[in-house]
Length: 61
Image (cartoon, rainbow, N blue to C red; front, side, top):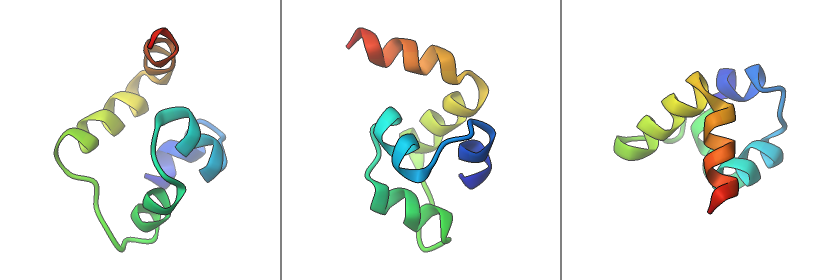
């Protein structure tokens, strides 16, 4: 999780806001208290592989 965010050079607040997560949830993932599962895990994989496509799709909403 942290590696994806670091690769995009974003703060926790920026990443959470841009991709629709709560900052608290993001912190729990990064601290290892929780692990993203199911659709959230898939969404994070798409963010990692093609963040511009995700951002473009979210702007269209």
